[in-house]
Length: 358
Image (cartoon, rainbow, N blue to C red; front, side, top):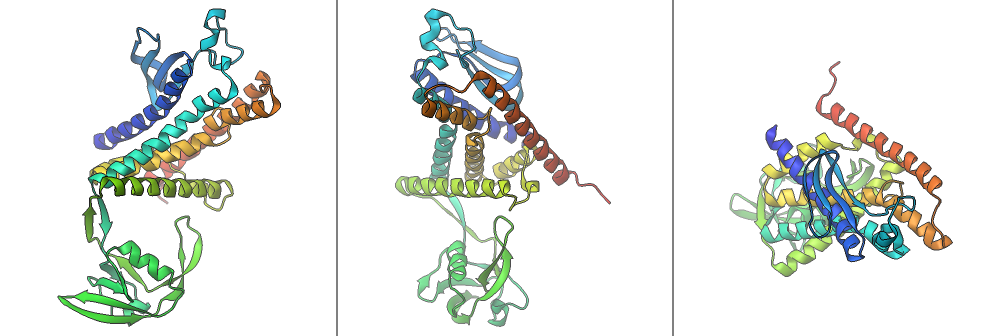
């Protein structure tokens, strides 16, 4: 229990710090005075005041977020005339947009650096060793057994399970020839994939060419060169971002059930498991959560960064800011939606971890 809670606090603490650091640094860059830099919400637990900047750095009681409070965040905030140049709302639209966007941008940057570091330290990759053969499938009919290692698919060398699986799925059902190693000997196996119904990552039913095999647990840790690690880190950052955007859209359009949304208990459980599996797994998990945090914050919902960016974009188009009354009303709606999402995620967590017995 302590292990799970510890790693959950570490993961969330680091990602919240990174997000708020983005806002903080861009605010300072544009000459905006930061009054408070807080990890957590609610009552102040511990902190100190910067001697030169006057910024209050603090840890607060509720560790489920954080905030950067800037001078003059709203046009209605009282600001002394001599301090007005350092107020947030004294800046033009583009600097304000940059300050707000910097939080999610730093989460994307952190994900890229975490993934690059993971590839530098070594990432486990599944070998093309068959772990299971389903009954009544082409693989069983062809005589494939658990423990068989595939070395070639037609003339293509196979060194990773992912390559083997993806090549079969893109075969369009044509007959393929596998070179298989078993008990020190090598032989050829001809097999024709069949179109079978399965579920994709989002739980949608799809028909794909399959032969009916699953991977084993044979794995090789691959340490990449710095250049390859950078390329892989970028590729994975883009891939996870696209996957997260697609998942979010499918949730909004109800293609994916809202019951799949996870909350703090799920994050804590997965953080603990990732830490147990080693540094690279923990870094991959942190990158995934960091990208999710960035995209969540970019949604055009008032009170989130995306909501602020939406108001600033309207201001840039109209040539004047959105009225305070409109923003206040919109923020109330946004806060209600956010609270509803949090309650729903917590409900899913409780159902997932404490199922009711019937």
